[in-house]
Image (cartoon, rainbow, N blue to C red):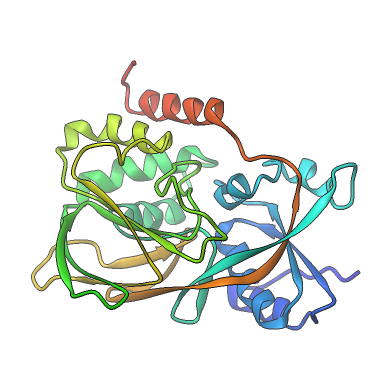
Length: 287
């Protein structure tokens, strides 16, 4: 067994790519780090064991691993049986991601959260969202799904999900499946700011697509561009890491990555209700 401490995301990708097909790579870090390692494991052909070491650990939630590092590490090996599974890999250019790529309000929120030192842990996302809302404006975007014609959408944010969660548990793409070979495109339409507390509480429970100016579609290739003259934030984030600026093309590679998982189901409705309550409390709203 070899233990390596990476110096950067690119270094982590290179280390993982050097492990042969018969090897196993256990990666301890946040979603962005695990996504970078996944890109290397995809090239090298090993099996990936993702372990929680970030603030949100949204991929860990989706896959069903324990969210505490010590508890997760105890499963490798441990009394729980690990099972091998093939999952999809999302790509933004040559950058792999396993979670959610984001544009607009949520990308600005990620940017603020990554630069914040005053707030730590999962609370940083609520703090960052509050600041982002003060500065961000709904944007006009042009979107193309697969070979469909370009179309224009007006939105606060656009999320492209390989899996379902981001921001410390928000189920922005509630039906996203890591093994279905599709990307989930969720567009959050322009709603008044006064509705944000309830909107984010619904996102926490994955119920925001039931009514309202929000849409959900599936595609294997998605291209997003800021419309000329749009004042939207142009940074693009995936798994919490900045990966470029608009325009962006996102693709999915079906079943491209082997991962080892515990036989433990992901958090259910109780965890979603708790997250929704925390969102409302953060905004000073009682249910």
